[in-house]
Length: 310
Ligand code: NDP
Image 1 (tube, rainbow, N blue to C red):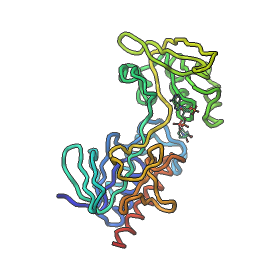
Image 2 (image 1 turned 90 degrees about the vertical axis):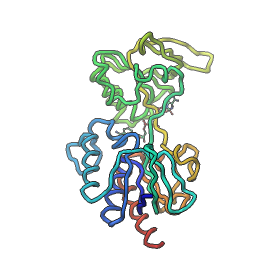
Image 3 (image 1 turned 180 degrees about the horizontal axis):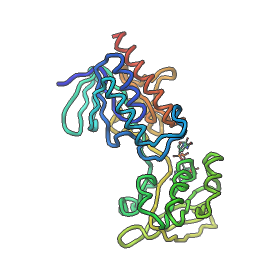
Image 4 (image 1 turned 45 degrees about the vertical axis):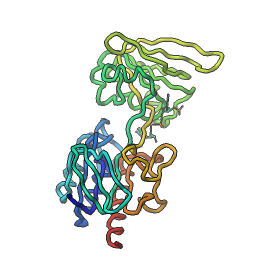
């Protein structure tokens, strides 16, 4: 069976930074890109808060450059998904979606997080037919149409703002009576004439013949002022946060209540010696690309130290 010193799972800023550092430390590594090569940044537009790019950089371009840099310094970057991993004994054994197995002395889990859905049956029914969790991926299809964005955080505001430049009208469906987003993001949304915010509103269903034609909403749900109403829309965008991608670990690492990997306070060590975690999969707090990149570096240095001590 193929054996490496460090298996890196995930290809966001954390995974690629870990690959760059482990390669430069002359460790035999392999990185599996996972379900979404390049990670969440490939789904955004310009990134303006990653230091080193004074006029911003396109998300896809940034990730392509990180990948190229990792390859240039010797990282073994492969497409493929780790579907199973046995962390009960070292070396650890991972299985890919192609059915091959690989052994690793250490593992860096950098699988990130994925968009959350409301859990409505209609979200599945209209998946790819008007329901999306990525405005920058799918917004193009809604030029001069009417769309709704669910959520009141920074992501929702960013997506609503982006869509408002394409669509004729954007509803924001916000369950509370305020936006959770930063003041700057709120201002950008408030300044757009074609964004209408529906506060205190929940979505209970979607309708349409061959795709989304509207949403069933309820204002003041669960109170005596409850008021059901419908809106006509062509697209329904979810922006209600993310869920860490930890299912494939099958309970072998200690997770917090929301499913994030718990790491040692001072390092990236997880509950299993030799397994480290970096990026959004272990970060319920910051969830920023630059933080993820930094934690990928930390994980690689932790791997180097761990192997040296063995
Ligand atoms: P957040 O957790 O900040 O916001 C989620 C939003 O979705 C909240 O308004 C929440 O409502 C709502 N929501 C959650 N679950 C449901 C549900 N079941 N039904 C209806 N509404 C729901 O997530 P974000 O993805 O917006 O942001 C994550 C992090 O990334 C934050 O730290 C954010 O600041 C950061 N970020 C920064 C950006 C930037 O600086 N440019 C851009 C994007 C994200 P409620 O308030 O009621 O809980």
